Structure formats: structure tokens, C-alpha cells
Length: 355
Image (cartoon, rainbow, N blue to C red; front, top):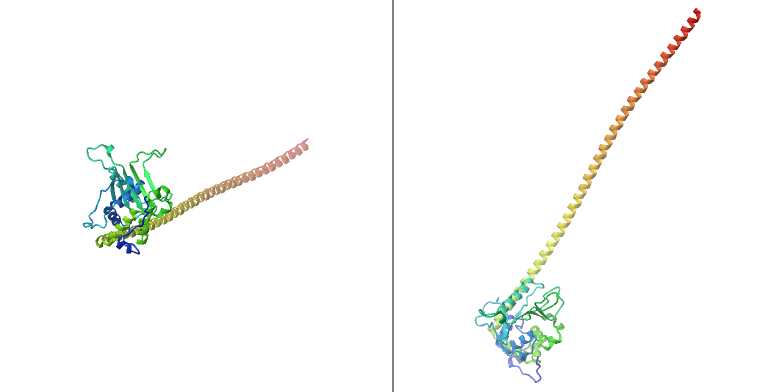
């Protein structure tokens, strides 16, 4: 980026402007108006974002100019689509309302890039498609799992060996919250100065940048002209308020979503606890049932043993009775034997008398 060596002068209005800039460069309408009304600003911005010297951009054409006299839709998407040297297209879009890991914005930026690359006229060869670059200018990190970076560049490539599929289809992101990470190449192309211009909140800051480069003098003059125009400033203010309200609404939706997710997580945790308690209760019930079955089995075994004992007692009683009967019979037999023996003795005595 060419630096100014001689003393510069501002228009009387800008020279006297102090304090906060009413509508800043981060306002879509301001950026679009400044680049639309000043080709040098458009050339400087696109050259820096493409990482090429300004003098190599010999021709730049804004492909989507807007007639601000008819502008009424504050919701309108105001990207900058420029044809560079009639050989490539760059699409620049501010995205000041951004949620980290936003699938909506990631898909939207890809869709814009695809639409920009779809520039082959009917009947022409696909090889004539103009290289296209989508540039997103954002206020904070887009991805929670990516290392911080000032200017990120993405291209289609082989994820195994890193081979680039094509350099004609790329997406770049300028992170305004990481100006401290600007590389020497970034600084050489003036990207850090453009980031400071987007972040400038006072006329003093902007005029300080203008003293370093002629293109920023044009930026400052154009911004003052747009802010001094009541009609354009009113439209820019309405658009900014819409963006702010949208940002507040999206932030509220994010908070609501987080609360819903937290409550859902709590409910899931409680559900898991309830299921765990239910499983423990079922396990305890099964253990109780098993213990009951064991107790019943033990009771049955005890009753069976008792029955066996009763049978054994009865058998023992029967055996005792039989033994008693056998004893009585034996005693009777003994008595009969004694009687028989007495009779024999008596007979012997009687026979002895007859002899």
C-alpha cells in the first residue's frame, strides 16, 4: 500500500469534523455508498482483500450499484460485487451480526460464492468461468474449533495430500477482532489499515489513517459526504437500527436456545436419574423376589425335612412297638420254655417213682 509523503488537506467539512462518526464503515449502506461513489476506494479495498498491489488493479467495476433515491428496504442485503480487470469477480459482504459456528451464515456465504462463480453465459465454455472470491468481513471468530487468525483463506483441496483442486473458487474471512495477528503480508497489502478503517469510531481516527494513504483520504471524504447527506444518513441509520434490533433478537434467541438446551439437559439428567432409580428399584425388587423364592424354597425344604423327621419318628415308633412285641413274645417263649422244662422235670420225677 502506497503511503503519503506530502502534507494532505481535507475538505472544510471533514477538516472540522470531530467526535464520533454517526454512521460508520461497518454500516452496509455506508460501505456500499462509499465504494459505489468512489472507484479509487473500491479499487483499494478489493486489491487489499485479493492480496495484490493496487497498481495491478487497472480496472474495477461495481456489478450491483444501487440507486439510493429509490432505496427503501432496510432489510436489503448490501454486498459489494466487483469485476476486477474484467478477469475475476470478488464479492464482499459485511456480517456484523454473527453467532459462532452459525450454520446459517456458513451456508449463506457458500451460496453467495457459488452464485458468483456461476457466471458463464449461455452458449459459452465452462473454461471461461471467471475466478470468484467471496470475502466475509466479521467482528469475531466464526469457528469455535479454529485457531484465531486475522485473514483466513479457504480453497477446495485434497484433505489427504493438500493438493489444491482449483484456485478459481475461494472464500476469505477478515476478522476485525484480530488485527494484532496481521502478518507482514497482510500489512504489506494494507489489510490492517482497512481493518482499522472499519473499526474507526471517530473522525480523528479516520483522518489519522487518511494521513497514511491516499485511498483512506478518499474513504474519509466519502464517509463524510454520505453522513452529511441527510437522506443517505437517515437510510443508513434505519438500516443500522434494523441490524441492531436483529442482532438483539438473534442474541435473545441464542439465550433462549441455550436456556432451552440447559433445561432439556436438566430434564435428560433427571430422566436418567429416574431411569437409574427405576433400574435400582427393579434390581432391588428382583433381589427381593429372589430372596422370597429362596425363603420359600428353604421353607419347603424345612417342611420336607420336618415331614421326613415325622416319618422317621413314626417308623421309629413302629420299630419300638415291634421290638416291644418281640420282647413280649420272647418273654412268653421263655415262660413257655420254663413251663415245659418244669413239666419235663415233673415227668422225670414221676418216672423215677415207678422204677
